[in-house]
Image 1 (cartoon, rainbow, N blue to C red):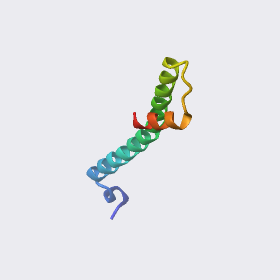
Image 2: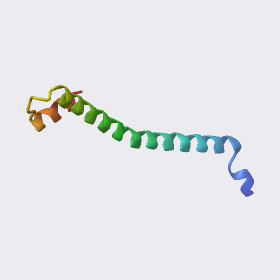
Image 3: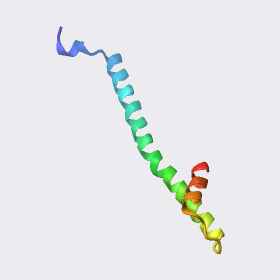
Amino acid sequence: MSASNRFSPGRRKLLIGAGSVVAIGALGAAAWAPVKNHRANWVERVVRDNLPGIDLDPVSLQQFVSYM
């Protein structure tokens, strides 16, 4: 069997497509963590900015942010 007949064009497309899906999934998972953390930081900042005279317990605030 020659090297050119070893992989059919359909198999190449399948492998390229599967590789692309895996790469996009990995990039999406890596990009999601900073977005989630950014949202949590934003919620905390909004609460602290809108309640300036109140001393907020950091543990309770983090628990509240985690529910959001």
